[in-house]
Length: 390
Image 1 (spheres, rainbow, N blue to C red):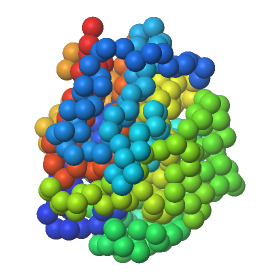
Image 2 (cartoon, rainbow, N blue to C red):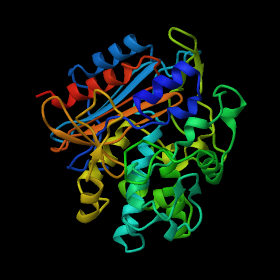
Image 3 (cartoon, helix red, strand yellow):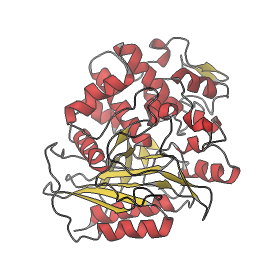
Image 4 (cartoon, one colour):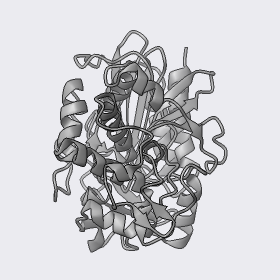
């Protein structure tokens, strides 16, 4: 979701589900070994930076994982895991990944491209005949590339979900087709390829593409092709009906408004995010995933090149250095280095991972979605500071 969309949702009381969003992200060469163990926390200002984020934006907790040039991993956790019990935050605790899920989904699609089972510039109707239809919507004219790139013109279904994110609707189970029905009840935003607009609908279609081509569930394919080969021990796709977070984790919150009470939204059915935003992970796993991706461990060179081929993101004011590839965002750090990745926002959690080209990494997770539009930039600024430190 764009910053513009977020401001509109906050002002109109539109559904919290629409918080499933992309944010400036990361990623680069130099894979982090799965066996890399965190060492003692250094006095590098990361903890102080996390504490400042909590002070500025009322986050109950903030977590981070960093990887130095030499491969040393450091994990941090400040604040409380539970506002009621004041329990300590688990170091490298699990959090909802939100739209970081999109990069996992795009990787699986591109692996299928490498296997000759999918063509990037083929219409999605070749693989899912008759599925993508609506006013101005025609799957015969929308390519797989345009779906992964957010240039399809498909309306964003999360703009039209429930207005009651804290009530029973938070626990509703959605089938992927339910989400497409919501989206396709609205007209196309523009002709395929004409513009760029972030839409979670694209990745629901991509998830169905994976299932059609492989004949297996989306979650299984992500686990088999990405999570297990990289040894991502804290990352998984929730099973149907699973509303909690397995293992050690902080609880997630959302403020009722500026200065308002914090609502515990940890328990929710993430089926509305599915292939666009349902994964659960940890800061260190995010670093390992993006490092491995940019280091060539998940895709062949031709597909990684396609993934890194970007288009402008004109509806993200103030972020002119960003561009979108195939489930991947290109951004520039203040020190001039190019970085790649994604990020995610979902009720209760905001995650921001980055990896530099020489293998340094910084992933930050906070346990609330702030009502301040500048809050995301403060999280990004801390990651930038960490990675640009000499």
